[in-house]
Length: 487
Length: 89
Image (cartoon, rainbow over all chains, first blue to last red; front, side, top):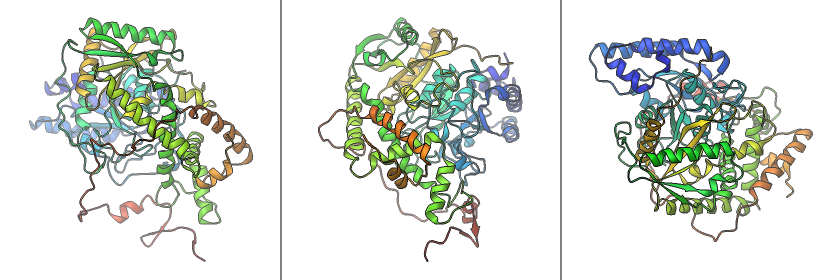
């Protein structure tokens, strides 16, 4: 097995046993990037030289006998909407094509303190708006399992890099499914943490009440390690939650005795492909064989969730993206005849079509005369959806659903059909609306050979149970597939 | 549902040409058609999470970012200031 195919947990053990050096690991990832990046196009900015430098520092610390964090020396890629000091952070937008943040996001500071190796900045849908990664201003990332298909989005670069062995782990962000859907399409594991458990300081805002940074990896243990490394209270984020966090990677159980898995019928409706339903139900049986009890439940407001999501997220986006005016940073248009003209031309030239659509939708639902009919109704529905989940969790520990209604789209399949793309979020948006944690796991392949994902949803701050359940499933199925060859 | 695209675009500080307005109008109508199915719910309390109220941080003087570092990202600067078009006649 090549170094780039190994998990973070394995590489950590090898480093400590001096079976390989951090430089060898970083070099293996760099070589893999050279070999496959032309095909996958996962990165916007590569940091190969800096990665080797960071790896050399780790080797020096190991040689000096220092006690290092579990992720020290592990190559990790970072989604390009998470600020990295002095390293381009573009949000895959022309608007921020030249933006070099003067500070690090809290999650980046935390990881650097733990001596991780940063491989670079990963492609995404512009401002995290999209489910295919095709809305990037710079490039279209491909699905490593079949290069004619999308990797999902918006954290498509993160998912593709991890799946292709171009990073061992990656950070993504999830506003309506942007970690879980690409994880599902690329056959990897992705966790959307409880709202408030990971600091959003330095995450470029899309919809602040829904956004959350989370870990993506090829094994549940790796995802648990990265989650442990980034969670925790941060005074720089007013929505950050005060609580004690356990070490998630070491607390995982071996069986599912005493765990009740809720199966909500609303998530298995006619909009979901038959092959996806079958794969997820096979997953349910596997959980049962590990000792879990299955229970049919109902979450009646699910059908309205997509509407509530697009109203709330677009409204918040229209406010958040008002800051891009060509004055203080980012793109500024060249020719203008007044301040207002400069604002309008900068924004019209700097934003892509999908971002403009959402700003327009958000501006409309917040505008005079329409606020009560749209935004207020959506916020009331948000509370109802959260209440239904809270009620459901009185009778079960986790909830099992498909992550996406289908396997990955072909490239170009929904470029001109926003509604088709929005529908892919139907199984994931409820989790953000209710502020819950959820994890996507591979659970088989479709007729086209592409991965299918299943989603486990937990109550607030139940990541330990979610990760433990996911880990049992992974062991029961004998692990999640090898890294595609691609060369 | 009629949407005045030009009016909303003005509020959003975006410019669209005629063909874009036509396309956007159709797409916005489709999207609003989707989101209009929301049920009428009894008026309830919406707002911050009661279990996790946000706490304002203390107003303390602390080291902050350096002006020069911040201005490096500005499209146009002069003498430590950001340059914008004339706003007052």
